[in-house]
Amino acid sequence: MKRALLFFAVAFASSLLPYDAARAWWAGAHVETVKAAARAPSEQLPAFFREGEGLIAHASIDPDIIRGRDAPALRDAERPEHFIDLELLKGRKLPPTRYAYYRLCQELGINPAITGTLPYAIIEWTQRLAFAFEEHRRYPDNQYIRFKTLYIAGILSHYAADLCNPLHCTVHYDGRANPDGSSPHTGIHAKVDGLPEKLELTADDFALTEPVEPFEELFKGIVEEIHASRELIDFVYDNEEKLPREFAVERMRAAARFTARLYETAWSYPFKNGLPSWLDQSRSIDSPFNMEKEPDAKK
Image (cartoon, rainbow, N blue to C red; front, side, top):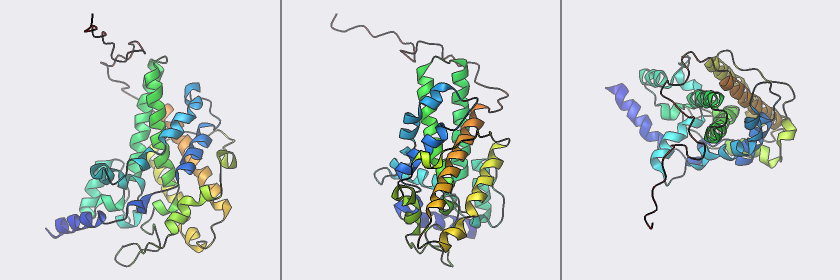
């Protein structure tokens, strides 16, 4: 009973957190990250995907757009997707699926809305992209599948870039956390978020010149990237007064590389069952539902 009360008390507290507390990288940084990722040398990604960086970049900022206060249900669902506070798990390993993670949080008496769900947003959108790529392989001329693929890639890129912001992988997200776990809101989070745009970094500044490899184990790769990002938490605080340009370039390059690896992983995803047997996307690309035009009522 006490655990349940604690769980719901924490849930209530999460609703009091400021809206921008978990916002990572300004829109320009997300767009430039996509460009660098899409332009990375690749021996397998299809041409339409690499040529569609404009739509991917356009979609990359959607996860922040939809967190407005006018849609409280969507805002509540979206906010935890942008961070993961590993310290709150008390040394326990992240489970590989979202609902196994929820069960762990319940066992620990913590609320996943406060701990964050970022790694699950990444693995789920990577798998969505894998299915879209599989559809494209079967129906390479279907433009709707192409558009869907580019949109999914954009959403995925947002979460991938968020993970490469060290302050999105720690409870110390805006100043060193108070003993009760609350944030002092020092403003360092906004300083890190805005650094790439303040420095006017573009994709050319952190371009990937070597081909990237897909992850052999997707979730393991995501967790390793979380820990790589967390290794820079102390550096961020030690250099709070003047974060160096080299830090921003390195983090943007890491975000682009991580995103590109997720794209490669989705393309080479090891399907065993593949698409459902009932799926038929061979209909006219001019009418995705292959429906007869309704007769003109005036005739």
